[in-house]
Image (tube, rainbow, N blue to C red):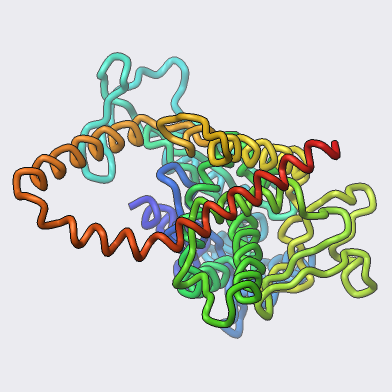
Length: 418
C-alpha cells in the first residue's frame, strides 16, 4: 500500500507516469528485508527520446540548464507542464514539500486523534493510552550533501522508513543481480538476514552514517561465498559446491573471521565479477577509484554494475565495524570450542532476541514436546528413519567439529602471538 501511495504521489508531482519512472528497489524487491527495513525508491525522468536519465546519467548542471530553457520556451497554454519542469529542476525539495502535504506533520499542540487507519483498515492505537493515532511524518529530511542525494522520511504510526533518490543508475538492476546470486548461492539469503539484523541491532547499517548498507553487505557475503566455494573445491574436489553442502553456523563464523581479523582493508579490494577475485587497491587502473589517501583503511568494493564505482566508499566507520566482527567471532568461538560453554542459544550471544523470537522459541519447544509425546505413544517405528538420517549427517557433523577445532587452535595461536 505504501509503495502505491509513494508512486502515485511522485507521479502527481512530476507530471505522471509518462514523465517519471518510480521504481522500488533494494531489499523490498529482493525479499531480503527485515520487518523494519527501509523502502527504497529511485525516480527517473525519461528524456525526449524515451530513455531514462538514470541509465545514461548526465551532468546535473546540464540537465538543469536544459530544463530552464524548456521553461522559457513554453507557451502560455502549457503552464501545467512548466510546473512539472520546475519541480524536476529541484526534485529533492519538490518531493519533500509534497510528502509533507500528503502525510502531514503532527504539531505538539495537536491531540493524537483522527485518521485511525492502517494498510488493513484497522484502527491504530498507542500502547500507552489506547487512543487513536493520527497518520503523520515523524521524520523528514532532505539529504543533499552526500554521494547519493535523497529524501528520507518516516511515516508514523506505522514506523515505515522511506528513502527516495533521483536518476541513480543500478537500483532495480542490482535487485535483479541479487536474485541471480541467490539462485546460485543458497546460503546467501539466510546469511544476509542474520548479518543485517546483527548490524541493525548495533545501528551500523546505514550508509549515510558510515555503516554497511544492504547492497554492500550482500556483495561482501557474495565475495566470501565465492572464495569459500573455491576452497571447498580445492579441499574436496570438483564435486564440492555451496549449493548442495554447507553449514550455516560454520559459514557465519568464517565470515566474521574473514572481515574481522584476516582481510587486509588497506591493500586489498574486492570484485564479485567473473566468480570473484581480490585486486590491489594501489594498482594503476584501480587507484583513482578505490584508493583514498586520507582513509587508506576503507573497504574497496567494486560495483559489478559499474566498475568505476566504489560501493564501500561511504562506509567510513569500517574500522569500528571490523572490530565488531572480530568481537562477535571470538564470542561465538568461546561457545563452539572445547571446553564448551553451556548456553540456551549460541546465536543470542551476538544477536539480541526480540519478543517475537522469544514467542517462536517457546512455540517450538511446546511443539517438540508434543511431537515427542506422539512418537512415544506410537512406539519405536520412527527409530529406523532417525538412524538413517543420523548416518547421513554424521560426515557433515564430523567435518564441522574438525573445522571448529582448527579455528580454536588458530585463535589460541593468535592470542599467544599478541
